[in-house]
Length: 244
Ligand code: NAP
Image (cartoon, rainbow, N blue to C red):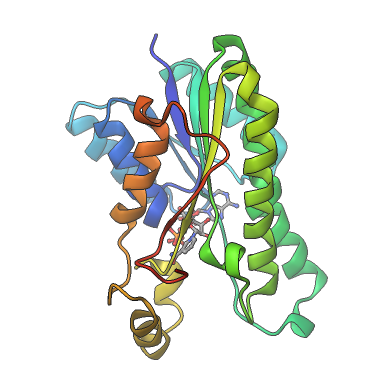
């Protein structure tokens, strides 16, 4: 049985585009969602109609047991997981002094511990195969810092630390770990900010537009491929020049 790919948070947005692109590259894909069951199942139907192998699994990435069960289901249905895209994420805008325990803890649990949970669940497969690729979706705010998104930016900076440290630890086992840091991408996460903020973000982006989920998926496909076999511990921004 061929190896499979797990893309966390792939019912919508960047994760969905990454799952579509990876399936079209030949990866059997496990679509993960938290609440958007219908969207996830629609995506599975679409992928199967194109001849790809796909399943959808509900799991909160913040819950270690749920993630372990999801990885087991993916392995049984699609083959051992040798490609992991840690994409599931949440963001909130607000002042740092208004960030209460519940918000702070949830942000860390989903954006950072979620990635930890997924990596630890798939590692036995990758270590056994002596190969694998892990791609963490950070953000330009994790590189640059983000006013009124302090908790979010902290988790995204931590994902870069996770990428570099894991890349060093796992390189001898043939596992590559890389990171994509998107700029402002046209998804629900940005749509909720409203039209005026959207216009401001377009103005601040040198290429003069928001990115598409497909723009980010291209970077994911690259890091997943054999063409990236000498790349590990890298952070690739997909941001239209935002932080040049
Ligand atoms: P999005 O449109 O809001 O989609 C988020 C996805 O994550 C959904 O599929 C959602 O599932 C899933 N998700 C959320 N919490 C989850 C949880 N606890 N467990 C499992 N899945 C969960 O977001 P997006 O814009 O595509 O962002 C994807 C990633 O890119 C995030 O890590 C985000 O921080 C990062 N990013 C985005 C931008 C941007 O401008 N959009 C920029 C930089 C970085 P449900 O649909 O089931 O809720």
